[in-house]
Image (cartoon, rainbow, N blue to C red; front, side):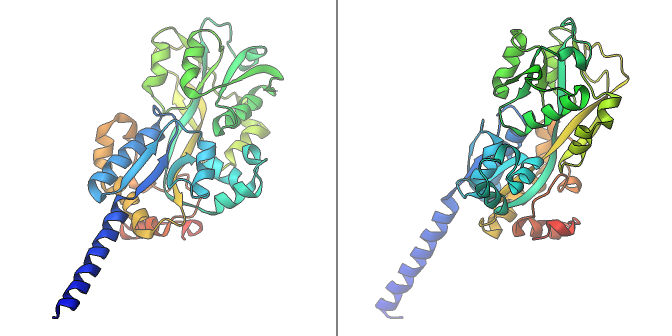
Length: 337
């Protein structure tokens, strides 16, 4: 080998090594919601494990408005997020909170691809036992927290309240919208008469209220379950009806044996332009480490790969699809890329 050939070969190898290092070091930008919620805790674990096992550098920003993270993902401004399933449908239609965005939201939805789904939580609606509110009709004229403004939660809670009362926001009750982080303090301070929280069933975050003072939950009524608003919710991808025993939480005054709540799913999403190998490794990060994830906190106890596609409405990324094929997980035809 001549000196010229050797130098050329060495230079080429160095360039390839530098390119590979650059690719490995390139950060993936991720966003999630309230840092105390299930999706942010899962995203944080996913970021840590992806770095440990696959050298993926995920820069996670929590506390974001999930209605907008999907749009930013579709526009290529971030690389990974987790959003309520119903938001994907609204984006694809350019409807509800995306109504003023029109084609921008629709085009963003077209660029989204899924990795996996999960049941995120259930909407718990409750008040202090001594508030004088004993039924849905008693919320008339009261301050009702319905979640962050223009969010999937506020849209869902508005429909739940309408199903049980026929009332609309500020037409019968006073709708209060603020971030999840400040809602608890507002409830404790008496600025909010009815509280809404969306954790998983049995959450310690709900228990902390009932341990201070007795609380009353407002579950779905028989009339509410038959209403058009509730049927519309049940026809929305990612929405589920769940029943919980009235003694799920301590220090409650509900007389019903079971309470019916609205539950919802979320999807982990990436942009369709993400390379197949990275999407494969992100998916693998979760399900190859699921025992470790479950052991890290009780909130992850019911995560299983058998339910990996629950609530998933966006087509799978080819990398995720490859992983599920290897694990012999059946993929519904409409999710196959």
